Image 1 (cartoon, one colour):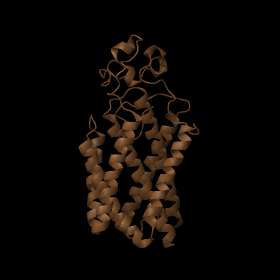
Image 2: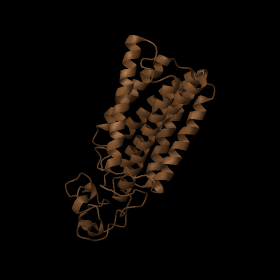
Image 3: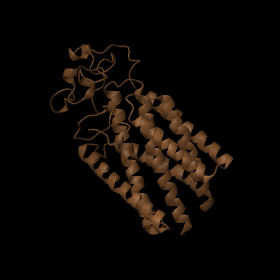
Length: 295
């Protein structure tokens, strides 16, 4: 299953799993490839078990020569991505976002500067999404500019609804915890059907937002009304649900990367993907709170 998240879709974090997904559900890197259900048959597309994939030469990956012969992986595993790596890199990336947001808030940067930072962050994010390898400097630069944007809009919305940013932070944390729980308890199934649904819903959502923006630019006001009133709240809830779905896809890709011996540098890419999803959820919740307090 390929993630629809552009950060992971080119990386090879994939398992064609039609069942439930959960941390530790699959065979761990280091097990014999002949005992790995994802190394043959309908799962032959597992990139960490294929000689031709870019990670096959990684001595710590599932597809190493020793494992292809059914032998055990080397005891030394410092070259593989781990959950601890992902947590550490995510903490650094989100910490950069928070510091930059705090600086933008304290300096009371103009709204124009905030949206300029958002454009720069978008460009940097797209560049990283299409790079062959993750670049920590590029990811942290994205986090810094994204943080400036979040600091500006957070202060703006705080003027509309006092305390909205903190409520949005708490809401984002609650969504993250909720998705993690339902993922680990196998309540949700992250499979091809789930991925296709999320992709389709995301495309429809983005098209609606683009149409709304165009009507707002040329017709004035709030365009089609997708960002105000009861309709705006409903659209915001859909946006939060989509962000939660992308978090589930992120968890799936991280699980697969750890299970099948992705290189350690991929933890930066995992942190980047999680940051994208969390920023999306935060901005949608912030908008919902502002609408609720403005009606």
